[in-house]
Length: 117
Length: 111
Image 1: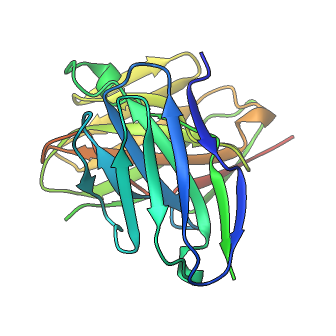
Image 2 (image 1 turned 180 degrees about the horizontal axis):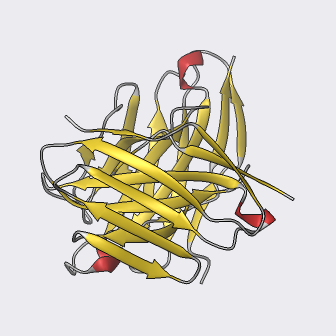
């Protein structure tokens, strides 16, 4: 099992450019998440998807859109990148339905380091 | 809303015991989680407390007191490889399994 994979690993954009960050998981998890991590601020939830076909806003959704393409894949799109979106982006997944401990254990991808100039 | 507070840094000696505290303000939540993150790496899950009390997993233990709005992570027999950032997180009971993370505590283990 690869777990959670993310592409690309690194990206440099100019202000105003758009791009899509890809995420896939092979653990048959129902819930998937996108976070951004800035120095000293921990992880902040951008969007999440509780199950295939549903998405919901997190703490910092402005400037982003998401697509839950199928159960495996959850993409994050920046339509018009801004320097404030320079960050490390993590995708994560969790079981999300059993009502057990497994629901709360999130598995993270390796991250995408994005710089917007 | 929800907020979590952790110390920004903790330093301890190899072989010692260290406790990382987490205080929170949240209207309601399913449980408190802890994650470890090494520099340049991804967060990895350590523990989850749904109920008050102590949960033990090897050298790591986690504690929750809902009445005190407080939890902690206890690391025993510290090793150099434990030098990392540690995040507490709550899962609000507002539906779904989204999680709110604290800003993290940087642990430095010295020889």
